[in-house]
Image 1 (cartoon, rainbow, N blue to C red):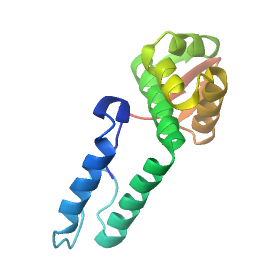
Image 2 (tube, helix red, strand yellow; image 1 turned 30 degrees about the vertical axis):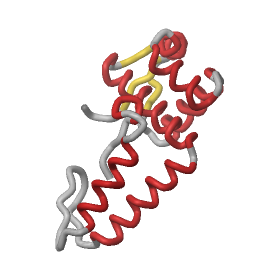
Image 3 (cartoon, rainbow, N blue to C red; image 1 turned 180 degrees about the horizontal axis):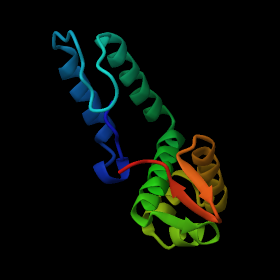
Image 4 (cartoon, one colour; image 1 turned 90 degrees about the vertical axis):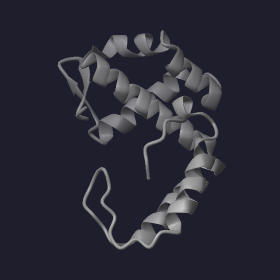
Length: 140
């Protein structure tokens, strides 16, 4: 499934993705060569997983909000390379996209959502702490 950033692509992105999947599903596919990962042949299973993921996103707004916060955090670290731990939340709060996303999906729970997002990214190894600074392990 393609990466979606609904704050950029708009609220209809999930519906457009469903329409695209319906068109693609009509094709006689033997092998899929994805943009990332190894080629695979179980096209129907991949389609089923994509459709389920979209349904899950539509039923649970918080999943979309959490996904957006992770992307905002990683994209910010990609742009800045490193960031002092103590300065990162104040910096994010000064941006419209972080604060506005939390207002839209989580009713202004800024510190809690920041902590949850950072804990998740640190546990997954997407963000690292090094000498009091955050950096991402994602390669641009």
